[in-house]
Image (cartoon, rainbow, N blue to C red; front, side, top):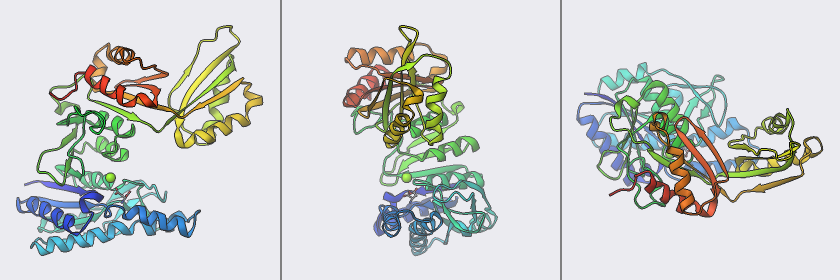
Length: 406
Ligand code: ASP
Ligand code: MG
């Protein structure tokens, strides 16, 4: 007997038949003698619709009222799933976030969970009742409803698993696990049996949209074993776990890409102390995140070129911030470029092996792909290349690191 949290995303509860299908899966775990808490998202598309209503009524909406509106999607699903379970003869009741309660901070629209009081829930689960909990919802310090940011029900599930000290947190979704790279681009992508928290965190933050990044941080912090699997097929998925649990470590576990990058080059920047601070200070004041940075060697000792990346959404603002400061920064030209993609190879095996970056550089060189910017961290090497080479680069790297499925 185990205590498990099962989480079902929007596509898994997209219509009444799918909700009944979810109920059957929950019943199977419950019949096996497990204590079960289920976390659900809103039905597919519902949250988008609710967000859209808010924007239509008031473009500069009050974030507290936005939360009241968008949190309702999940309330519908918990009620329907509890009914579906009852119809299968399973004792079940629904829990809104505030009923648990899932206490959060007061950052409406993107709140963080502070504490979950599970005492009442545990008592009922021990009596054989399935707890059906609304994901995404919290209760703020001022007693108002909060939401946890888009995709936040993953975080709800992991946080609940941590609070319940659950043996497992199974995240059911529309893919059957975590892949070595995007299978829509690389046909030979493989499903991973296991991946470490660190690697998953990199993949999630680099745009692999399987799990909300925050949920992975939470899982890592509390050592919650998370399994990502499909609600439509009966097969084990990918386990996100501690490094110790993985016997055969690959050098590179996954290759991610993000099209959400844009590059800015400042040509002819004076080469003297304080220049980087003068450039990046105003950007950070404007809450613009800078990711990769390279500064060229100055040929004549007086001026240099500086290249860096921001998100595509921030590009126009970044250009404006810097252009406004042109007199002070004294650069000759500013060259924006949104036609770029960041490709990253990720693997904890890199910590103990040399040559991982070199494999990447030569694989790209062989395909004639020019690398514009490079950045590295302990378990990741990222390069910026022209966007039109995304597919070619992913396939070449997947082969170069020996990741292709047989
Ligand atoms: N329903 C929310 C959303 O669409 C939360 C979630 O699905 O994780 O963002
Ligand atoms: Mg999701």
